[in-house]
Amino acid sequence: MFLKILAIAFYVLALIAAFKMETFTKGLLFILVVIGVSGLLYLFILFPGISGIAVAIMLGAFILKQGSR
Image (tube, rainbow, N blue to C red; front, side):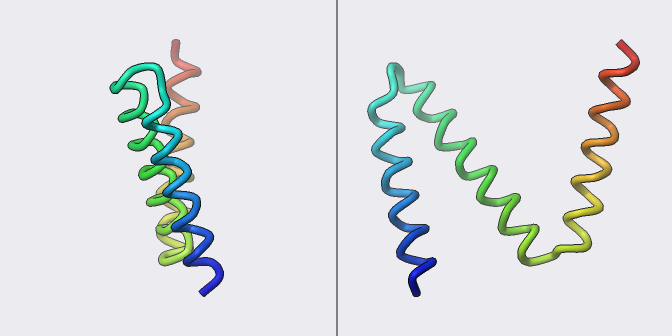
């Protein structure tokens, strides 16, 4: 129960921070990043093996792409 309350408080504070951003676009991007990071963390908790492999493949692709420049 405590973790759910803590998560709700985090999202409320993130929403308040988004509304206080300089422009609407920055606030929207901030909320999208928060949702994306939360989704990744949820995948790590829900499917630890599958998501770990997926993240390793994405990081490997990113590193190889950076090396080819």
